Image 1 (tube, rainbow, N blue to C red):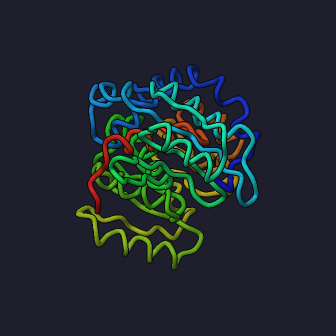
Image 2 (image 1 turned 90 degrees about the horizontal axis):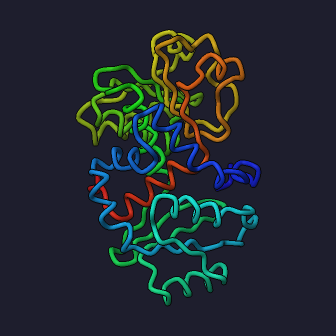
Image 3 (image 1 turned 180 degrees about the vertical axis):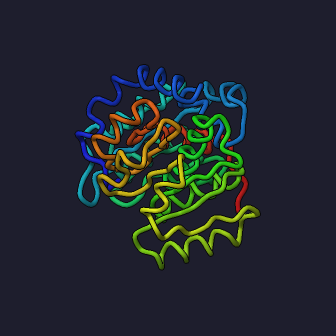
Length: 281
């Protein structure tokens, strides 16, 4: 979780109810509902199982050290979703051992490089990268009231962006992908298209692309990627990138048509996918 800082999440736990209300206005669903939409399952199916599952959130201090409040924030998100979540008093390996001894069903943990969940009974690992790309694409589908047949530009050909592109293509969208590294973008699209029926296309001319698309996934780690000129009344933006890559004027112009959060939706999607695994590619 190298991009997150303590300031990104310090008030997040206190805003979960308000965040769900905002999501309902933007998408018609709350966190759990959007995550289930991305996983193609009914909310009722997971609600029947949530109360029977215990999730341990392990505090990791290795590498550059823990982000202050990270484990507590993850626990708060999971508890808000309805899971029985707890934080072992020990950290690192000792914390993991304690979680297993305490009969946790699912483990959540993160270090400088990876954030993932493990379903211990299924020997299943769910990575935040894939879950985040999937859930933000699902959110955009809901914001658009169906993305099928609509043109969507994914900005950023990294793992999150490509996971979002895959989900969008599966929803039936016409997907373009842009990255400042054109060779990387081309290779990522070519690799992804081997597994897709509906192909995604590399988009190298970003200035022209801004005039052709009304729907965006902003999955970069850069500021000011999307400006106010690219935004019109039909524009919708789902932004898993940290920091948010929309200019200040762009944010004012788009208003409630931007969906952004640093941690919540990805965590919800991880939890859902840890309970109901998606088919492997």
